[in-house]
Image (cartoon, rainbow, N blue to C red; front, side):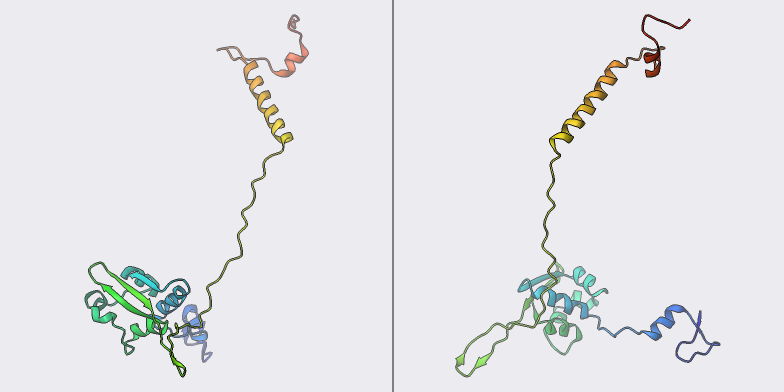
Length: 191
């Protein structure tokens, strides 16, 4: 709890989260602004986008209203509705709506320009920044080990195999440790 941030009054206490909201309020965003930015991003790649209703729910971070699931008129391209402004501002319009399967198809708008020299149709190009292009990927080369390393590893494996083969363990008998083998010759035994 901290004193009121705006007035500094210590008698009026606020939680830290509320104080943070007062000091730095978020820019008010519309419910469908995320859909606008998503469609602008997709405009760099394709002319048509098929989105399922759950995918749109995930993009906007909220559920679509029930009328979107029940009524095809909700998906009309009328600029008077806030949800339609989302895709129209991005340069898209709805082409196909299937309520039974739960998807909508958006198509990029093509605007026609009339020039003095006659009717010429030009494709509308928005000033869309291209999406982030990552740095070129150079896969690391897998280096083969040198012949020296291979021969050392092979020699170690052979030595381990020889050591295992030479140590025979019989039930009840324990092999002699290496230092005993060096101290006594096989025909001499300590008395």
